[in-house]
Amino acid sequence: MKQALFSRINLALAAALAAVTLAGYLLVPAGSMLPIHWGPSGEADSFWPRNTALLLAPVAVIVLSALLAFIGNRAGPEQMASSKHAFGTVIPVITGLMLAIQSSIVLIGLGYPDQMVRVITLSLGVMLLLLGNVMPKTQPNAIAGVRLPWIMNDPALWRATQRLTGMLFVAGGILLVVCASLVQHPAWLIVALLAAFLVPLTVGSFYSFLIARRSH
Image (tube, rainbow, N blue to C red; front, side, top):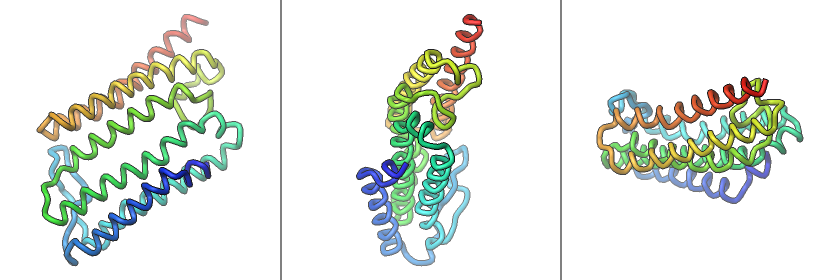
């Protein structure tokens, strides 16, 4: 866990997040109201003062990192060894996602067009590409991966399920990257986001259930 939290890439992303946050305080006029939430239409529907809004991303990184560290410490060395590839990817991904969101909020505060839904779609597409590639490397564990009762004690079925779900996540990631580049309407981007996450999980779970049922 410490290796993932203090890896070079995660520290670099955290430093970039700190720099963007500082730039926001220096460049965005004091008293500005910045968006913190976007509705299904893609329009911002909730705003906070600059000083508070710019704290959200750094605080989110700290809280989520602390939560993952707590989970890792409670899981024990064996579970962590089985899921180290997933943790090594998820932690920098969270920091990178918050960096992208913070950068967009600062740009909005400086008067640039609001492209948050597109930025989130692109960022989550990259996240799915990375997670899809590491899922097949995980071993049965209680922390990361598609964890279903009928695959936890079957290493072969675990590997097959993670491999299929990971491949579908990669396909979903490619879909999101393409949609973020070409699709104009935010509502369709949200549909693509839901499909990219739900379809792989549903198909992977159903596949593992069918194989387990045939085996028994």
